[in-house]
Image 1 (cartoon, one colour):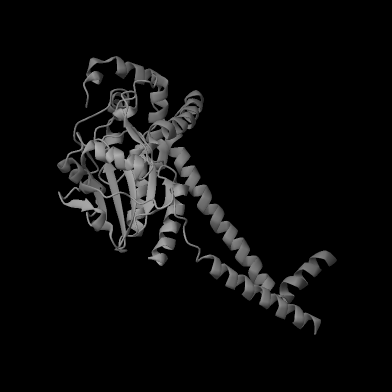
Image 2 (cartoon, rainbow over the protein chains, first blue to last red):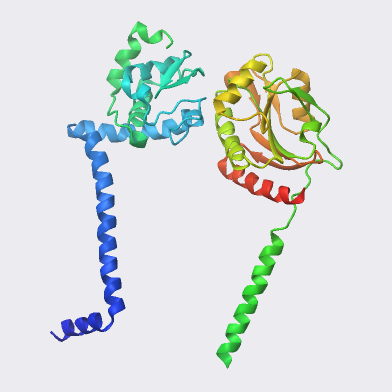
Length: 174
Length: 199
């Protein structure tokens, strides 16, 4: 009782201290709300409905894809995925990228040299192919790119990549 | 009494410190290369089919580099860094940029023009130039100490250094920076400010 009484005295005795205390609590509450909202929404959306195994693979693909992206793709498309002006198209929020995941597989392996339209803007710089990348590496890069920077493309397995690479239509350069 | 003295001393120290800091910011950049080294006379054509020569940069400082439009390796990152310089000195008329193509056979004038418009830059500030292949390689090697050569093994067919060379109004080299490293370009931006105070 004496202890509580002392605390009360301090709190009431020093008005400024009391205000600071409430402000801190309020600030902490605000910040924590902000943080939990952001992270939970992101993870829930992408990993929703996947079983435990796929979730694990997703995370592993994403992490390795990030490293591969930095090495092979970020020179042109930038670490931020924003591309460079009208020269190199963005991957972040790119309708071209997210509309057709299968096409991305073939573009990474064989390159592309036609005029494409990304978010309503025309791009005609050719992209070289990366024949040295394995099917698994392609799956990892695409899983990263489809889900980084706020993209919501989901998971792409190595099996799907192999399946599309075997098709003849893939070799036709886009 | 003792306390007042202490405060006085503290303020004095602070003033000396501030004064020293102001003094040290007026250092000038070194002049690089062998004694009396100047960028040799040149004459190249830019994306607007206009001649670019030493007279173009008479009252200016400029940043030079070497690239080619189909370069898949370091050029995109260099051009992205050069865009930082372009954007910072957008309204500063005394700063220009000069990019030489090292693949003049493929990089024709219309192609350079197209490239410049893709980057959304104005000719007045950023010249993309082409010319006789030998003279470009010669000026790269002997004037800018940059290095470029054709190489079948290299991605895109050419090897070249990714350096940005800062040249003052007297055609002297005042700084060399790695155009593929953002931190190095940070110091280029600081050095341009320093050099602008000088001219």
